[in-house]
Length: 395
Image (cartoon, rainbow, N blue to C red):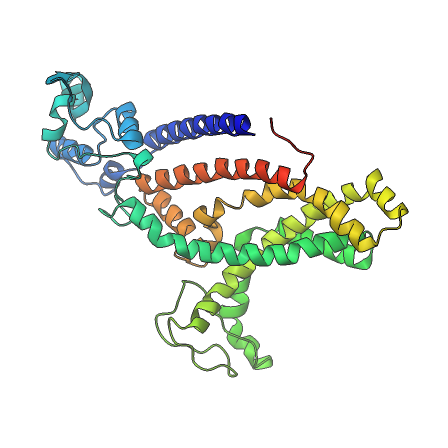
């Protein structure tokens, strides 16, 4: 087991490094950024202004140098060994680009020894490996990215934990019961509902709930006075509001207000998860129930409940664990579509805003942390396999 864990950890480090390298390169060659924004405003900027902006966002450095600084924080100045500077005259980038009339190319290089003295200077950075994700450039300019991520993390975890708990409570019994009672009326009804739930996109359910419980709620209340009017988005209200005649006026920030704002996004995530997970568990259970050892357990006279719960379910959970552990990264990444539809101030909405406004420091940090959580979740899944099925051994 120890040798297996060491080998897997080494593979995880390689995967994270390759993903970080490719995503940094792709983000750097993608269109956008502060210079593109100024050009879209049809603002005439001088080469000196352009050089200052490029230096402010470290765009004047070559992308391998930027990647090294982003990853481990080097370099920000000359390397001094035994009082002697090394690689001081190595060009790290181009501070001032030559105009086409001047023949193009680079007019003024950025050298390693000059990096702390530039205007603006190249700031010291510890790199993401040491917890320094840089600063936001657009969404909240100047604010550390990690602080911005931490301020949104609990909102996403609140949404994901509730939806995950409800999904497991509903999906597992539904999948088991549908498999045991295959081709029954319940199975046909459940299969049809699951197909509808898994085929419809998340934003469809979100817009449908907003339309039903917010926009058209007033007209529905004329027929059914008990019908509630739910808030369409955000995490809490900014002013008191009425939900229904049988409820008191809801105060902003109260437990009832937080619950009502959670109701629609949690329901949407739960519907989508239950539809997919229950169908997956049903298929896994049907495959296990046809095995010889299940028929043998029944022939020995064991109670049906014991056959299902002890012999069949434990083996059916092995493939289900694979999709379950991959929900761990969502505790950080959030549900991008759902949070955007309901304007939920979580990680998914932050990532959408960062991409939409070309705040690449936030986007890179988001993908990097999600990558680490994904590879860690796969390792956790392998460990859980041996817990669920003692026959699985890693050597």
